[in-house]
Image (cartoon, rainbow, N blue to C red; front, side):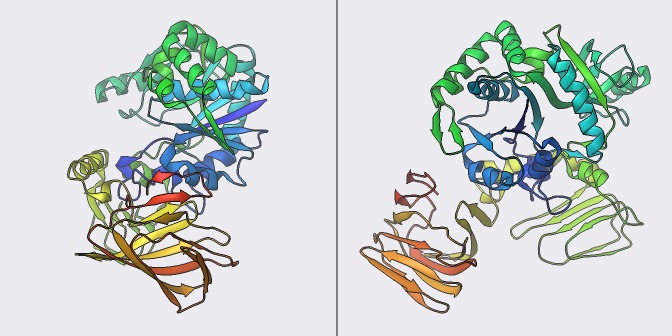
Length: 468
């Protein structure tokens, strides 16, 4: 039995401003209608069950995107980031709770693979090796001396599993050219295939502290519907290490299956440009773009017109609250911008103007001294938490759909162009009883308008206390 384990905990800061801490690249549709997470799930389907590993902030987004992709999918929540070895260990312990010993396919949820059938054929070869007791990696046939990837060495050739002879961490340019010239090295794609028991056996041998911490974290985990929350203290006690360092570089059971399937980790804007179809001038254009005398550039609009003139080898990305302009050869450095934004406490580094919630979304339209205007979108049948605010009042205007509003002891039905006031301290919530999205304009007023001025009294989605 195969159990896909989707590693969906990354932040993707080098794809800012599209990718944000609270809405990272694996949740984005960068090349079509499907997100990278959904593309990954489709490649690994069908499966009797699956596990997605992510952090608490992304749990509802991940669960929603996996619906109808890989079902049933358990969302395994990490209280803190501990890299891939503990994530895979927790997933392995969880997968064995059914009493069997499945083959785990541990894969990042934010990669691109063009040849899906070729990938699946390689996966079958890797699964055969896993059933024989090997711990298998998928290694990408290199397209050149790339310095941004690790390398896997093997003396043998062919399409089947090869014994691994060496791991090489991201090399400098000269070293990468030497590895490519030797012909015996593959890029490390970070995709692993092994039986759950074999991984745990090797982990207990080479990194016992990780194995023990993760076992305890799963044993004491909190279960809620399709979510499994790892025990915070036990999981945090695990050393942080990758699967490569903790196990693969130490075991004598490592083998690699080569793949040549149009793989990319789309880790930078330059990588996305390379992985996307361009026009006759080599430009990759998305959204409302006007380009004149531009070549080999990536031009992306999320809403407003992006007009570019005479650009070569550049990246221009527009969102509602930020615009990025950079040479393509500086794409790796975009994360430095994010670091500065976080240092300065700017929200653009962590979230978009539109913020997703399990009930829908809200978007800040305008803000000033003592006021803020938002647009709320509530899914059909969804309901916000029963809550109150200590420092702000709100005024709601329904612009589309119907709203059922609870205000203290009263329940009020509102139609389009009808409104209601929510005084400071009043207990309230809104529900969409209809079959179409509900849109509300919310005007907040008060001395403090932060999202943490929420006291939840009741919540359908298991959120409690003071939170956004």
